[in-house]
Amino acid sequence: MAPPSLIPVMFLVIILSLFSISSSLPIPVRSDYEVSLLFEGWLVKLNKAYKDSSEKQKRYEIFKDNLRYIDEHNAGNHTFTLALTVFADITVEEYRGTYLGTLPASPGLHITSMNYDNNEKSDIYNFSTVPDSIDWRDLGAVLPVKNQGACFSCWAFAAVATIEAANQIATGDLISLSEQQLVDCDHKSCDPYWIHKTYEYIEKNGGIDSEQDYPYKAKLGKCDTTKESNIVVTIDGWSWAPRKNEYGLMVRVSKQPVATGVEAYERDFQHYGSGVFTKYCGSKQDHAVTIIGYGSDGGMDYWLIKNSWGDYWGEAGYMRLERNIKDRVGKCGVAEWPVYPIVNKHVDNPFGMKKPAETPSDHSRAQAEGKITS
Image (cartoon, rainbow, N blue to C red; front, top):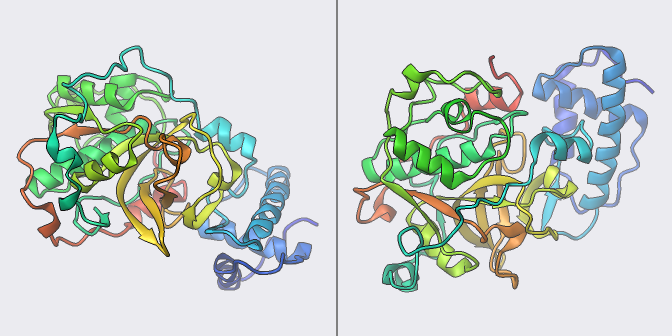
């Protein structure tokens, strides 16, 4: 049955909202009409349209299959729920091919005392001064979730998010920085790349421009050398956080947000809605994210992850990822290659800062809906 084309918008949104809060219930038996209502409501919510009726029907069938998968999961006893995310109309193969890519091993991934939190730095393992939980959004160091679109530029978003945070911690100024500069002028590609190499480029360039001056296009463009030389924020270097050591990583995250790679390959990651993600995943990192905090929920420890897929994925663009598991590389490999920028003049007591964090803006919501200007 083809989806109906004329249904009151408010009714559709209400139906979709009711679906989003249902979990741990018997698997719903949905009629084609109910599925079509959910589909049309999802399209309205994301302000999305297709090129023709054939494409719409194809996406409807995929949506229906994803909905069945989500319903089956949410009927079980899990620590997290799935939801109709921004990826609800694509297959898991399309999701992997468009938004994920194996992060290549760098020939320069050697660990030295100059670029690694090591045992000689006593403060890195001083747990007595580390809070049980921290959310850098509450401390004013995190900007709203952005959307990388179909460009595999997650590495740029993770690097930028950590620099935005480190600069705010050091100076008190929270400035949105340019991922597009990194795509155009550093890697010159939308392909996978190394986060630490991006830090090296920014340090060598003398800094990075603002997003306002060099906005994101979700595709590769020619490097604007004039904007590349417009330095808004600088860094003093970079370092690996403690590797394969979630306790040491926790200490580093208590000081500032950290970039890392995770394996986001599974279908449950694609449709993650809320809760602490505990599903099995490997450690072949195919997506870069930012750790902006940590905490516990019902006795279960988690990392607070900022993603770059807009705020119609996960918990308004964030994920709580299981922390302190038996595998030393952490859930989905989160603790294998964590890295962060160094910005001097850090405040002595960041936990005393009470500047309110910003909430997702209309601009970030527009990005999540796919309204990224070209």
